[in-house]
Amino acid sequence: MEKRGQATVFAIVGVVIVILVMLVYFLNDQGFVPLSGTQNFLSGKMEPIKDQITECANDGVREGMEIFGKQGGDFTPGNGLKYQGYNVKYYCGYLEGACQNNMPLLSNAELSFEEYVINHMKGCVGEGVFQGGLGYDISKGEMEVDVSLNGDGVKVNTDYNVVISKGDDKLSMPKTKVTVSDVPFEDLYGVATDIIETLATGNKFEQVGYMMDHRGEVLINVDKPYPHVVYMLSKQDSNFELWFAVEGRGEYII
Image (cartoon, rainbow, N blue to C red):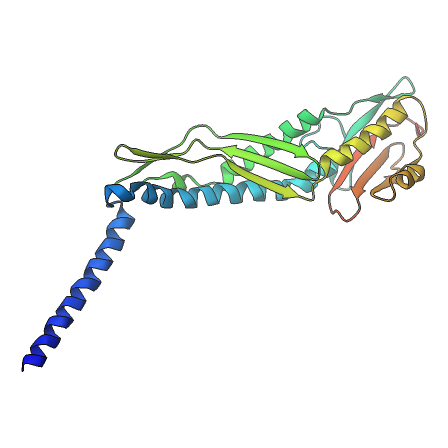
């Protein structure tokens, strides 16, 4: 009888322990945490917000880089050539029988990408992710995006100014940083500059000789949808392409 009583006591204690553990997990999820664990709680609530923002920024770059490259580094070129479903920006305009350098500044290309990423993220990051819960609040400011087209990649820094608070404790989300490699826009922009500067001086650009000088690291393909010319640049072992057009009038200018 005594052993049976002890077993009953142990069973009751076990059930109580299980209930207490479940209660702790439930209260933690609802925001009822000890003061010493508040920052851990806030950090746990911030993590999924940061993950979604990072994922959306990454998706925005990967979805936009093809059209960005094939339209000459501009999502909405005001003056471009309709070619293979793209609006290819004119880097060289025809004026008085000569090529006039109309290349966009690298900083303008970055601003075009920033605007695209901002618009993409507004539709990607759901407002529901910024809703607070029982015991905590979430606030956010204006989204800030900075895009850098450096070397062989695109670097995107985003700042949503997100703050999660619980009582007097607050946690601010640091800027999220996303780098997508295999987007050598800056390098190919340099090649385009060489081509346009050559044409603008009235000289013929030696396509094959240029590639040989660069030991095959740069690939230059040329198409001539009369009377215009489209240059398609890429780097060896890279899928990214930079296209731009040279305007012609009645006859090829190169």
